[in-house]
Amino acid sequence: MLSEFFFDLEKAYQSTLKFGIMRDLHNAGLRGRLPLFIESFLKNRQFHVRLGSCYSDLFDQEIGVPQGSILSVTLFGLKINSVVKTISPGVECSLYVDDFLICYTSKHIHIIEHHLQQCLKKLSDWADTDGFKFFPSKTICIHFCKLCKHHPEPTLLLNGTPIPVVEETKFLGVIFDRKLSFMVHIKHLKDKCTKALNLLRVLAHTFW
Image (cartoon, rainbow, N blue to C red):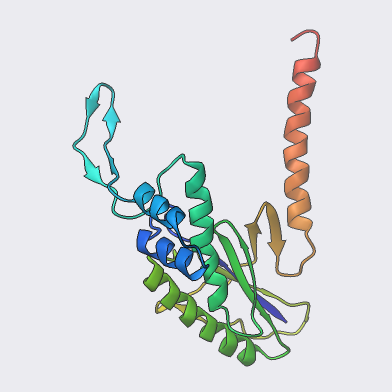
């Protein structure tokens, strides 16, 4: 049996702590003038909102990386990568930008619950320390199992909120179902292709 948790980080790009970025740069061994340049790049930033020809007051950007900058993507990637270091031994993980999952395999459901709950506690502490926040309502669990007999679903908590167990979810464009048949994903691709082909038929019809 395999249980996977798919996490949703709430406004991850806008909630990155600047101090956390500088700390991770220092821990990575970066010294000299470059850290000073990055620190200057991040601090003393302000923004305002335009609606038509009207502008709002100026606000200080206390957290988050500047939108639209190439350097911001690299700094955010450096900061978010620190989540991998919190994973407990034996627990597997996958991280692509801010799409993150953890999984654990065992024949016994109570062992899965024990290891994943420990990992969830570490992830919650990491989020509190680094300024991130997991979306409890959008963080879900899928229990992959091909057993025909009935068995209990894993019961786990994130910040005191039970994590729902679902039948299917999409991760990096692929729809995973609990039996790993991928029939739901294939049907989804078929429907998309059918819509595209129908549009081409209309455009190619000479009477149109």
